[in-house]
Amino acid sequence: MALTIGAGLVYAYGTSESIKESQKARNSTNEAKDQSARQFAAESKKADIQNVRTVRSQIRASQLARGTMTNVGAQTGGTGGSAMAGGIASIGSQLGSNLGYMSDIAKVNTTIGQAALGYSSAMADASIFSSKAQDAANIASVGSTAFTTFGGPKAVARYLT
Image (cartoon, rainbow, N blue to C red; front, side):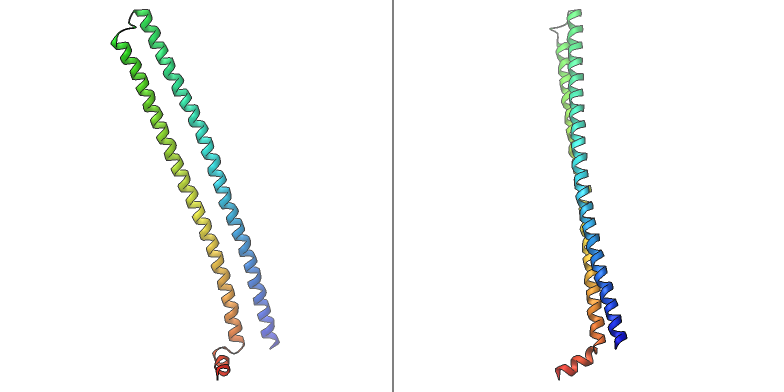
């Protein structure tokens, strides 16, 4: 009998420690989830800053091209011609196209980052649920061991009759 009680106590202690460690694992998983969200926010901000720099560079380049074209046109006497107007319109159109492309890329990068964050969050949740399931299995095992130790189905049958 003392051996059974001692084994039960060891088993209960092991289960208790397992549950404590599972909680630590869940806490770490939640921290990893939070870190992932902070990383996404930082990468998103970095991409926004880089995008603004690129947009400014594109605008600067188009203004330089427009100024160069206007200067050459003035030096050659072609400031009122359709070629000059078409060239300047082309620069504006190209700028609009480039800015649209950069906007599309920024949206896709945001979508990719959000998907990665969603994946990371789902994996963290899966780890937490797995840990909780293991805790429940440990508790069930303790109950099963106790049930068997104290007579199992025969003891229940004696109690009911």
